[in-house]
Image 1: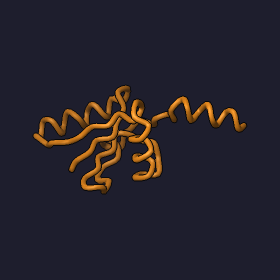
Image 2 (image 1 turned 90 degrees about the horizontal axis):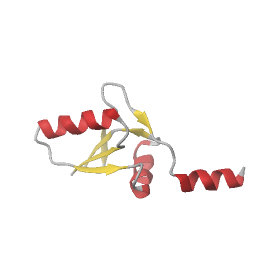
Image 3 (image 1 turned 60 degrees about the horizontal axis):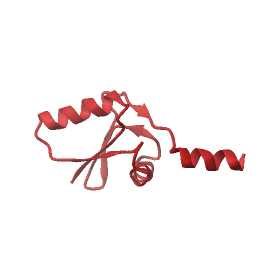
Image 4 (image 1 turned 90 degrees about the vertical axis):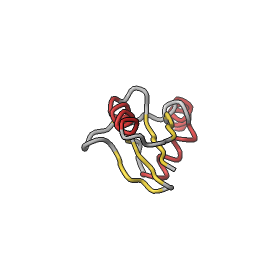
Length: 86
């Protein structure tokens, strides 16, 4: 299965999505800004918060588009927890 981890505000996510659609690839898309579980999976898979990320059968096959990507901020609940510890 092909999975696209991205963010609505990232133009490179849109670019990769359009490329997949053009090529006729079937994929499942996750918005890591809206889906905290998807963000956790992204971090486990890549060790970071850069999107877009393309995953095939559990293996990362692409990060970014032509060397470009967006860094996703942690969800507000994680930011609140971090600031309360500080």
